[in-house]
Length: 252
Image 1 (cartoon, rainbow, N blue to C red):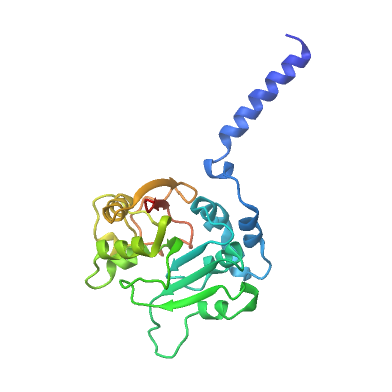
Image 2: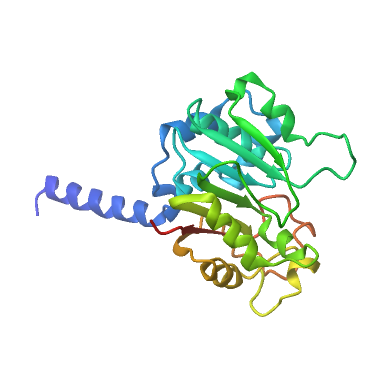
């Protein structure tokens, strides 16, 4: 074998090894709109510091978010994903930030300040609804819930079939439902309350029972060092737990 062939063979071998060492999620193409939204300098520094753990670009690319889409984000909290989603869908898209009414009457939710900020295209509508009474003004392309599905199960008299059917009805035909949550060990139904985790198999069973088709899983937030026996705040920073991301689709 001549020197050129040897270099070519070595290059192929090195490339193969490098590719094998790259996590599966890293090979996923990140659309420009998502990359730009994550890089937006208007995002709070506290949010940007969490990106390394929460991997928002990979998560939203897995969801298939793009310009012009309408999204219902369940329980947006302080708006970590809301800001990014608003920039991704742009002025021709819309984000419904859906959360429970504030515990103190007359106190606006934190996400309201984002909705009022012109930087976010005025494309965010805040909807205050009980956890188990989900609805949106018109059908959307994506329903997204991050680290909150287990909280719905903890609500008094929670009817998960009715909840997931409401999400099904809120989606356009072919629409996507994304569930991201902390992993619990199988066979531990009490983990939703004691540890704030949930068995992914339970989520899959409950969501498909409402008529959804399971489309796939992203492993971008997996953490093999988490044995699922501790509460999500017991020594973990947000994003450090072992988490699953499931994508379901409403049939056309």
